[in-house]
Length: 179
Image (cartoon, rainbow, N blue to C red; front, top):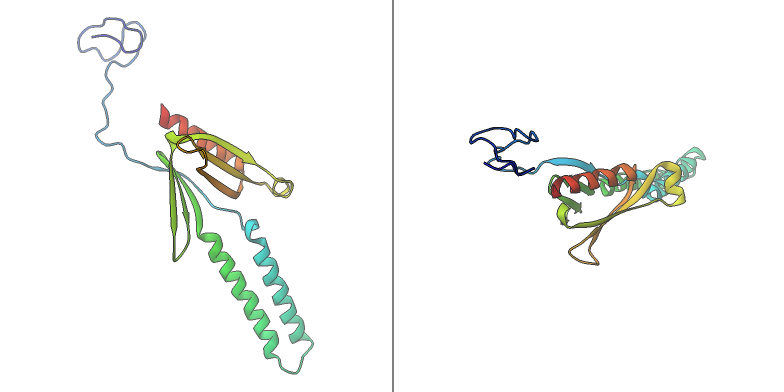
């Protein structure tokens, strides 16, 4: 029996090579299962404009109620509209996610109508991290993963926390997949 590492002839049935110590025959798993490595979601800062508009509406409604204007319903309508905008913004924030598994990167978008895109880890050509000035101040960034399969196919993770760590996690998963 020949060692797959160094080529040394070893005894028949030996578990390890007597020269380099390499395992002679590793049992192969019956079925390799895909498992989750990480889940990425955009930061709520990505939806800050919705929260800002809602805050302004709630403040205006509160001001109208405080001033005791003649029809108080208008103040309640503004406060209700502000709360509705906050709820819609929170739902929008939960409808985008990126899942990293042992075999692929999966992008999911949408609540009622949904879109799902996948990229095999073996097809990843490059991982790019971009941090604009405001993003750097609050610890966010964008990660763009380009595919080797097509020049114009890429998955972009918008406004995620610690983008350098996310890029490193994707890189390590890719290297482990290729090994």
